[in-house]
Length: 280
Image 1 (cartoon, rainbow, N blue to C red):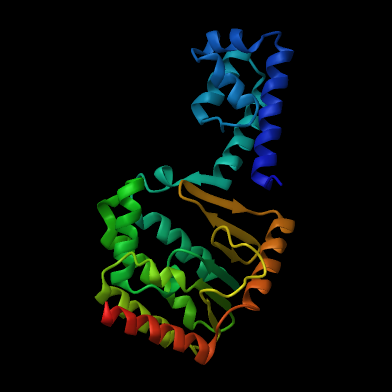
Image 2: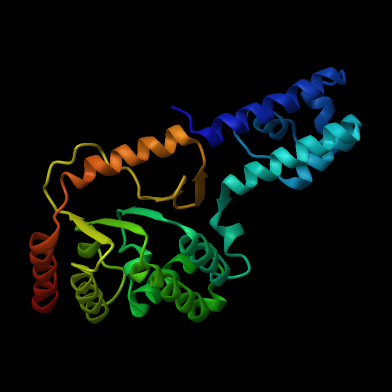
């Protein structure tokens, strides 16, 4: 099933196609006018590739669209770009700005529900662990010149854990500890940080243990912050404002909590993981 972003991109692409046809041009003719190859026109019109701002301006000029139509298209494309941002775009100027966005969003939120698969969720990371995570991210996506500042910003995010009036649920997989992104000493410190989280007021912390049957296949991690959901992929971050999609992820979160280890059970898992690090 297509996401709201995919549906909106398809609608936008279809409108571009209709405008081209209304101008009496075929795809090859438009490609020649804007200096593209014909396959690019096809990809944009079929929604397989999101147009860039420059692409749209080429389209507007080639079709000589009215100012009102052009402004509508620009606004819609800007909204699409806000909904899906590639990591290379997001961290081009560095990682700190992205972390500060989270500080602002989470400080205003009353509800935060995090489900992470491959790493310890950011709100519970130690500074040393966060540094290794961000360096790994920068090695693939770029923007590695301000990691120290980005780590500081990520640590500031954690102030929300101790603010009254917030509902915070943080769920992670045990496998995130068994595929470490940092050396054993850093992982040990991170595990002790997680142990200290158990019992913090306003924070519900759980672990999805190994070899426990889950109620649904967990394809990726995600965060729900009030009425928005965010999904991180290898290549970018998708923001879902659609209430039905947010509700579906909320329902999935409830299902996952039914399989989660909490309290003493979670503490046992964490102590075992720390012991295994000492014996490796």
